[in-house]
Length: 358
Image 1 (cartoon, rainbow, N blue to C red):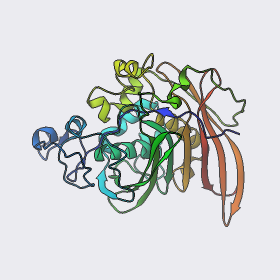
Image 2: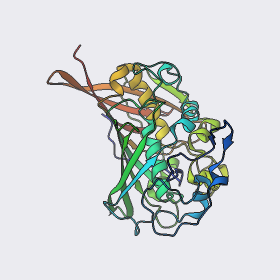
Image 3: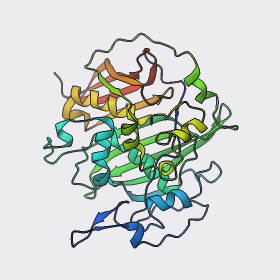
């Protein structure tokens, strides 16, 4: 069985958002059909170092936020403080997201069981990170250690996801300062879509901490055979860029996922893939297995165990761990993981879903 404790995925300030005035960041079509830019239409006002709570009225566009906002800090996090509503720019980002993870499932591009196409449930991961960056960008070198995504309903691409967030916890452990950011999502009709919760650790003193040095250590190989059809992906730079290009660090030229010079400055030989890309691969495995039931009343809990460099190939797989009857449905729990070509586990956790009895 895969343990979920281990070396964390290195993460930079790579999630960007916008407290939208009823709109998402980026260019939009005007009533006349032309493209209008929120950067040109909205005046930029530098933000104070204190965090602004979520609002429909932005102080700046995502690109300007990235270079004018103070980084998130442990001291300024107020546990329990609510943020939102905040709109994730789904329509602007979905094509690039699917391109980044090479997800060609017809439900995301054509008709789906819900009528219009739907987003992969794992997109709530990146949505939460972009929401966080709209509050304050995370500093370069921040560790993205864990992520949990719960789905209650499918997110249709003709709907607008609206997020509400809060810092659920902050604490010190193993000489590092950690925080937990929890987001809840609905569409504009009020339909509950799900939750997305991330756990991160601020950079340690002196840059990369002990947990980030695992990339140079001999990886631990765990023999676990998958029972499902695996997903195999090679992390190419163009895919990594598509996944993280709208992040705060990418916009200010400091992303270890996008800019090779930033990765080398952080001590890596090349760029590092965002940990959530492996979550997308695992989610695709579960979609192929469970179909519609993966989009409703399902949960993905993952730990990012070690950095994955550009050019590496990952295999996502799963096996059934438990099946228990709960009333008229069955709760299935799967062990899920991604491993590299050496057989070292880079991401591990569980996926659960309520399914109809066979």
